[in-house]
Length: 401
Picture 1 (cartoon, rainbow, N blue to C red):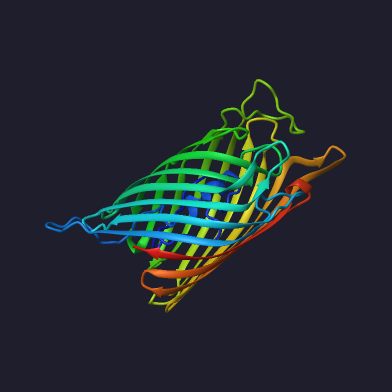
Picture 2 (spheres, helix red, strand yellow):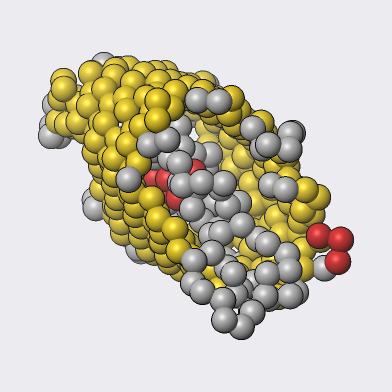
């Protein structure tokens, strides 16, 4: 569970693929819902929108119900015991927004997803079987659109029950089955210069509460960005974020990964990111997003958790009449500074991740559409416990009210 998304979407449509995936791994895979939920930044930034007398309040809302069925291969992302299962999906979303006609913009988003495995998946002989995944997300955000200053505040709550890779929040390679809650408060302040140039500073604070064996922890630290909006839904941004993560119960380790009693672990991340979003035509039918990032992590112990991570992500959105296509591909690498394969093979641990998502939908009426989704996760590593493949296919229907 990490940071929220930076850019406001054009609509409250849900992201493709598994609703809990995203780009920062582990806890970020849980919080990636917040990154891909299309809600974090509130209403679009409209230069020149300022308080006017006798202007009514304009509200808009959308309720979406969805259902789907499909197949998931390697449901628990296991390196040694992949298990496949059919699954059924039921979900609901509610989105309400206040247009910033007088400078005040507000959005509220509530979402719930239930994924039930028709074949219960066994994590291990000593643990209970996994019968599905569950996510509940809600976020309220407010922005004041002044002439030059744009203060904002977002409050997000997330509950998730799922299996995910544990690199971010656990010592050993491999997946964990986690149940957790996240509460994040994200204040920010933006200043708009002439010629559509802007800078922004924020201080997100996140409390993540996990059930054992995953340790609860805090996440906090400043974030700054500079951006240029050069067209409708087109922008370039460069950002930096410094994040500390003190754990409640997770211990520091020695250079071989053995826990050290009487200690508590804190990790420290420095993340640099460049993002380019572009709309290629006037009707806004074709949009692309390109992101590149670099993360350097250091811990307060012997450095067993230290790594360098680099990656890129490419997303597309294409609308043509009743048809719509969404796709996204992500690739990233981990290079661990002090972790080795084993004492018998002292080679630094490395890992490469590749994710691909695609969604095709057909709108039968303004309120009813059917869709097909595909989601692929692949992880390669020189540590056997770090490798897995997973495929998910879904077909379903969504209705707006």
